[in-house]
Amino acid sequence: MKLETIAIHAGNHPDEHTKAVIQPITLSSTFERAEDGSYPQGYMYTRLDNPNRRSLELVLSKLESGADACAFSSGNAAGTAVFQALEPGSHVLAPDDMYHGLRNSLLLVFKGVLEVDFIDMTNNELIQSSIKSNTKLIWLETPSNPLLKVSDIRQISNIAKPKDILIAVDNTFATPVIQAPIFYGADLVMHSTTKYLGGHSDVLGGALICKENNTFWQKIRTIQQLSGAVPAPFDCYMTVRGIKTLPYRMKGHMENAKALAKFLDAHPKVEKVHFPGLESHPQYEVIKKQLCGPGAMLSFLVKDGEKAAQAVCNKVKIFTQATSLGGVESLLEHRASVEGPNTLTPKNLIRVSVGLEHIDDLVADIEQALA
Ligand SMILES: *Cc1c(COP(=O)(O)O)cnc(C)c1O
View 1 (cartoon, rainbow, N blue to C red):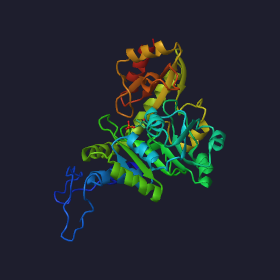
View 2: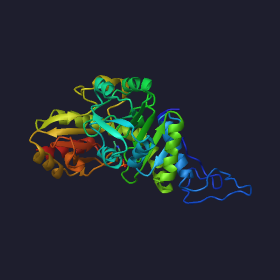
View 3: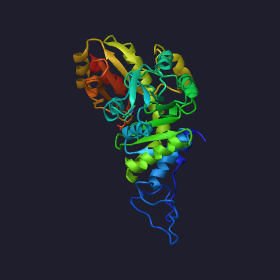
View 4: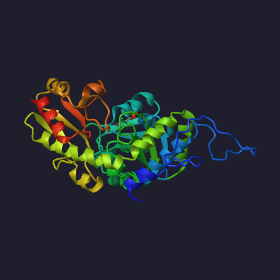
C-alpha cells in the first residue's frame, strides 16, 4: 500500500462492541486476567502495552517499512533509549549539527558512560577515520538541525556495516513522506512525533522504529517498558489522528517552503538560505537520490548580524516567534539563543518551520519584517 493509505488505515482497530469507525481511547491502566491466568487480548498493564500505543506503534512501523516500533513520551526519551541500550564504554559518532536536546543528553546524562565525538556527518572520509575499535553507533540527523545538512545514509551504512556499527537516523525533519532511512541501510529510525507526525503543536511524543527485531531491539523494548517513559493513551490517540493527514500536510508544507526559500534567497538583506530544495545546497546530489522532496524546514542568515536577526523575529505578525516545528502554523526563532552557550549555530541565523497558511501572507509578513 501507498503511504497515504497506510497513514489512514494502519493500526486503527474499529471497536467490536459499538462498531465505532475510529478506535476508542482505552484509558484503563490495568487489564483483567482469565481463569487460567492468561491475558486474553495480550494486555496486562498500560506501562507495558496499551491498545492505543499498539495502534500508534503499528502505523509508525508501517510508515517507515520497519519490523517494529516503540513509542515514547517524547523524542528525547526515544533517542535516550538508544544511548541507554549501548554497553557502557561504547564510542558514539554524532553530528556536529544536531538537535541540542539530544546533544545535551549525550554530553550530560551519558558523561562518563559513553565516549562521544561530534563530527561533520556530510564528510564520509572523516566518518571513516573517526571510527574506533569500540565504536558501536553512528547517530545521524538528516536533514540536520538547524543547518539542514544532508548525510548520505547509504554511503555511511556501507562504511558501518562491515564493522557491526549501528546506524540510527533522526528522521524528524524529513518525515517518512520524504525519506526512508531503513531502505538506505539504517538499523533504527527515530522521530520526535511532537513535530510533523502529530502535526498540530498539541501533543508531545517520540518513537523508534527498527529494521530488524533483534537482541538490541529487545533491549530497547525493555528500556521502554521498565524506564516507563511511555506516552499516555490520549497522546497516542492524538498522534495517530495527526498521522492520518501527514502525507497531505507535507505536500502543502513543502510547496510553501519552496516558495519562501526562493523569496529569501533573492532578498538583499539575506546572506544565505539553508534549504534542501535549493540547487546551491552543498549536498544537492545526495538530496536528489535520497529525498523525495525538500521538507519544509529552512534557516537563513540575516546580513546585518545578530541584532538584525532578532529584530526580524520581533517584527513578524503571522509567524509566531517560538521554538519547535511541524505544526500547521508557521514558526520562526533566533536559534542560537535557544540552544544555549555551547552552540555552534551562527548568531545571525533564523530557523523557520513553514506552516500551511497562504504563501502570499507568509511572504508579505517576512518581507515587512526584513524591511
Ligand atoms: C524536537 C526534536 C527532538 C526532541 O523531541 P522532543 O519531542 O522535543 O523530546 C529530537 N530531534 C529533532 C530533530 C527535533 O526537532
